[in-house]
Length: 391
Image 1 (cartoon, one colour):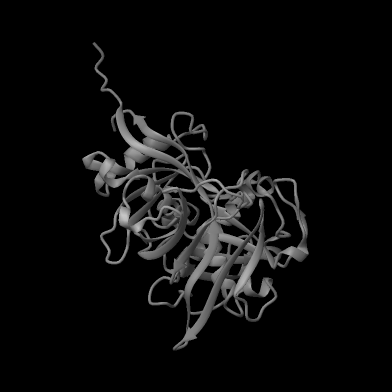
Image 2: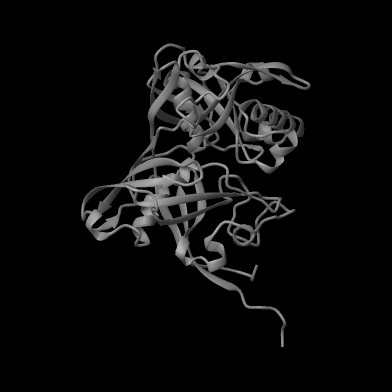
């Protein structure tokens, strides 16, 4: 007789949302010990994804060994008034036994509402047979409201369509997503009070940066200030250990400046946030898909780091930060896009382009944004049960 216990069997759905993929759970479908925060929940999600994996492949789990595909989502009926569901996001590290709960995933935000409908979390009276359903989501990690507009056909979520999203291979149905009041705190989205700060980075020198809390805490720097054109693709950055070390140094020092950590050493335990992105004026380049992005079709180029590597497209939350920063005259993002009053930008990223809109207003000396808006798509890839050894 074997002394090993059988595998746990947990109801789960594997979904794509935007340019990310993740394993989705109803909170009440998790083992009782995992229905509350703690080590048991973290260990369970690590095992689901297949982390930590020293081989960096996630062969023994559901992860895809990239920051875009090592994601988990827990959804439940909302505990917050006037909201439909609560959405909790866990970013699972690849080579470390660590789940980062410090931020949101903007891409998977587009999949939360369809998942909620599919899994019976939305009451029948709120749904329509044909048309658009408005789902109000409470994002637990950042304590913010997200509104998704989900198309339905014949009483079911419409997943197929002709909406194309650069970074996603095939077209699908469009899901507009609104990130309400994306700035953190009391509406002052710039934690230092400055639109541009100076960061003293060892080996680089003094670097101009826009530090913003909107969508997700993000550090924006000029591509030219760190030796790049701003049109680079993944391999240029991810194949260079010195480049990755440089970005991690910028991230750690920026996090200190933003008040997110108290020591540089803490940055290692907060991998998901803040993000680092570099911006540049529009220039033509060949995207990873092979198509040419023309400078005339974009307002600026942006490249962003996620979990220590250059992202293959753009994180949804970082897109919110881009749109918000672009709307505030004088930020590095705004200046790269030509400066002045901006309410919408189309930016180039490694996989193509993306448009995001935001309108900023200054109230009592503080910049505020009511919402940032963009369109994504989502669909179920597989549903049933995930099985893992007892944790």
